Image 1 (cartoon, one colour):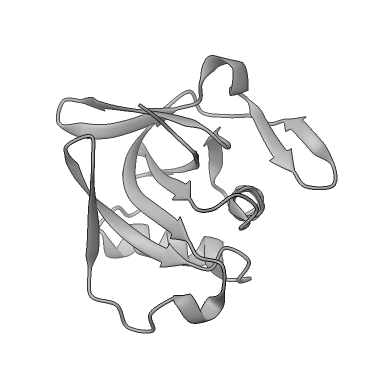
Image 2 (image 1 turned 30 degrees about the vertical axis):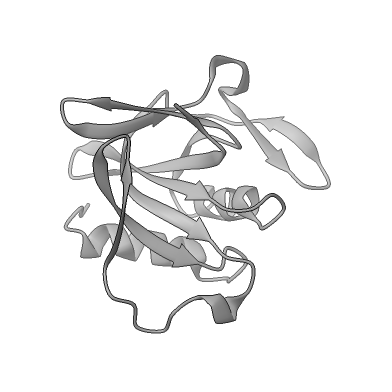
Length: 144
């Protein structure tokens, strides 16, 4: 299944763990991914992610035509070092305004391809957004 989403990964606990970044067009998904890359994440896919299940886990990779590319608004589509695939441990749902993020949310999950996946609602333009993704991984027990 192809999802309109980006995928970034971080090497944690000896394996690549990913955050699938979804949201409406123009909300800031690629901007969030670019800032996360500057904080030690690695690109897996931008704009479209092929999602699949293997061994009971959810995984993602870039469609072949988009592998190793990321869009930077105002600059265009640029080459970017990337990871070929990773396990998806978190779905980041980008919202269009900071007030749409609940202050103290209960744990949220979404079933993707039959796999229950933890959800983080996030305003992608918030300066601390990449750090929140990293901390969410730590909260999930996926530590360095």
